Length: 173
Image (cartoon, rainbow, N blue to C red; front, side):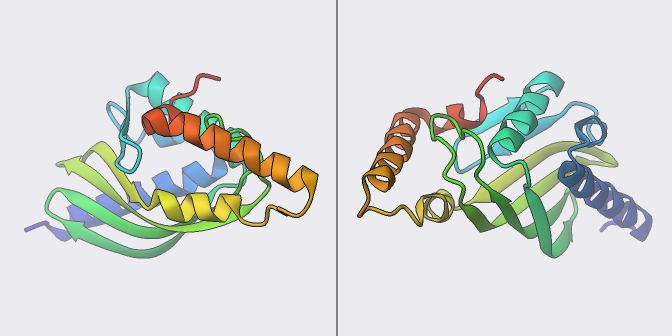
């Protein structure tokens, strides 16, 4: 059973981590780990170490510069803080091979912040890829040549990336 002091410490660390991600203060985000480690279950991507995790954050913010969260619920386990949240943003840059669509998204997600005592050792993120894709691809005007071309470019990029979804968030800058 966790004591209240440890629960409070972990909760503050996670809330600060979330706030620093939104502010894009990635040095502060990375400082919440002794060794940064992210796992994106939907794509199979694992980002391990400071440089890899920093590249993940920078790449994802190029695709979604206004990315932010809305916390739905926070739960405590003996070795984790579990957060359910909405992830929101606008697709303004390349996501892997998918060109920007300009569409906004709002996707329900769950993140497990795994701890060993007071040390954050992993952020493991679960989300529904199809919900995100549907929102990014909505609104193409398939009755106009321009809309058809935009849809083709986005769908072609997605199909290329589906060969290995883990590469979508591992693009080098």
